[in-house]
Image (cartoon, rainbow, N blue to C red):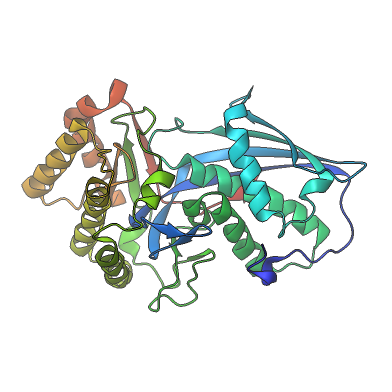
Length: 361
């Protein structure tokens, strides 16, 4: 079904015979969370995220034109160099959703080779980086077919397509801060795709750090898709959507003013509210682990003791993202190594910072 005709490919100079595209796209971490969506892949509330830098997916897309148009989608998928049959249904579903916008898909045999710079299912959004990387590669083929596409339309459509694979993937294509979801206080915002934060960001957020503590590297007991669905009929859903909308307004001002105390309060409240929604749905579930809570309490004590601007946020999982200004990097890393690494599985954590989005290699 075509709901956004502006994103339907205008056929230009014909289809290329074959080619290869390699790109990277990072994960992202939401500051104001979205939890709950409506068909197809549209958010119940707007969200704002930091785009990450080194936590990313590298995707190589090879394409060979078929002699006759395929009835289904013809592709092979390799993850970390090995065939990954359990990923194929998700890619097939993605292709079904986007085929009306990219009518060349059934004209090609694709080989998709993908790898991550971070552990899969580690609480870093691998679906966000993976789907945004694949969408970005596919749009390079569109650019060959339709070289007249503007840069603005290109990035909007890529974000639009990525969203149809994984909601949060639409926020990974640009940086350092993106907004997804229609909000009256964010000019140009849309439910259909993400945009760059449309205001000058205060220098306090330059090279903002994100260190991810790998508290639990196992698969989540409840997938994000299932969790989002549990917001339908949730007793606190409407109040939550109102709260998120209010926090977008507050965070917008914070990102412009550089008020780090207000940043800490909004970001930590959002993280805990996300998990409160999980604990109060039916069926209810808890994705935090005991070590998650230990880290949070240690962070609070550290901030109280030395007046740090360190704060935490959480995705839909047990691992903890520690956000802090670049000026505090050495002290925070000492704190992690001295007091927090004991709560990490195998002592593992990942140092990252905010980045600029997808790029061609």
